[in-house]
Image (cartoon, rainbow, N blue to C red; front, top):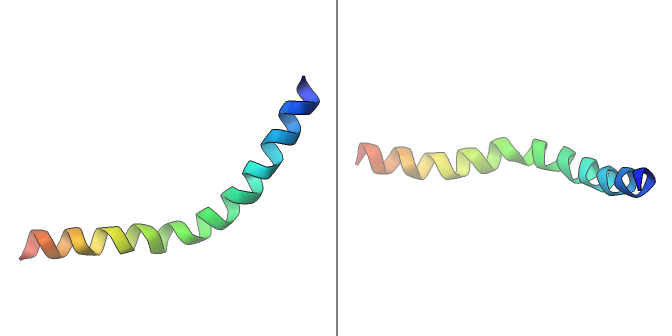
Length: 40
């Protein structure tokens, strides 16, 4: 059971690193329209 859980966690870590890199761009992409709506 523990070995199976360990193998499941490793791919998540591989996906997490690119997500952390793209997160700021994605967050800014969603925040800018909200800021524009609030100002206009």
